[in-house]
Image 1 (cartoon, rainbow, N blue to C red):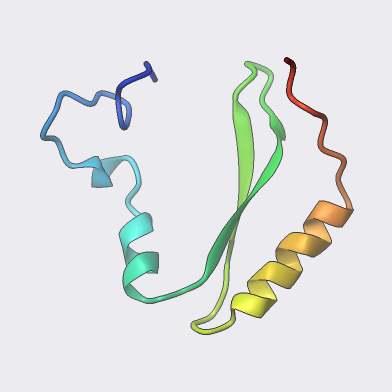
Image 2: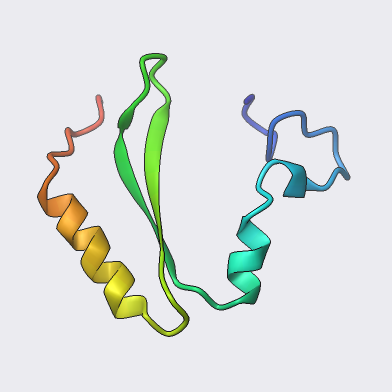
Length: 79
């Protein structure tokens, strides 16, 4: 979506929960999460993997993220 918009269709004053309905529940339940880059779509858009753990299991989430990262190579972005 265009630069300056916080979410698709941002008209100012709208609630973004329609676009990200699962963010607030994870924040409210204190579940640790990690977002890992996975690559790019055919259209050139970034794709990410979301890892969610049990409450107070930050170490497990970090270990899972690291295990995934070790299996991938991440090219440097163009300058």
